Image 1 (tube, rainbow, N blue to C red):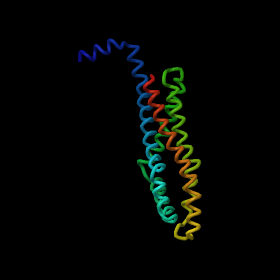
Image 2: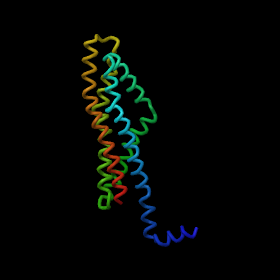
Image 3: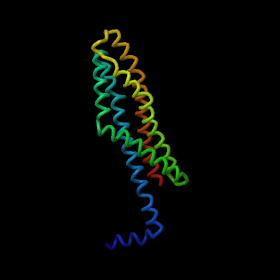
Image 4: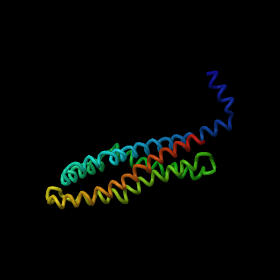
Length: 183
């Protein structure tokens, strides 16, 4: 008890007020950094081995498997919590960092928030429409040539955009953590 009182005495009223007023910002920024890293890690798996693994299968089988993955992603609570949660947290900490822009580290947090939102926007603007198209394709009704054409038209663009949405949240996480450290 004595050490806690001594620490508070050294901190002083102004210091204690500063710590208490910034704690939600620090917690939210740390949570945003962690969720961004998790999202980036999930996408990293697709960029580094899932898509190339699917590409080893026959195109019709790859289409069927990816359709299954996409259907699972749309209904998977933990994935959606991380994916949507990282975007919501990014908006919140981005606004908070903008308000604090003159403070040390706020620019890093703001940059990280923007990059976290890049992953969300890229997903919604590019990957989801490609997934939606693939959902309309019945791989069992395709000839081998048509399945190959469909898979190639999907694989290249989807994977390229996935690389973007892999790098963006990983950099986002690093920037936010630098921002927290820079305070």
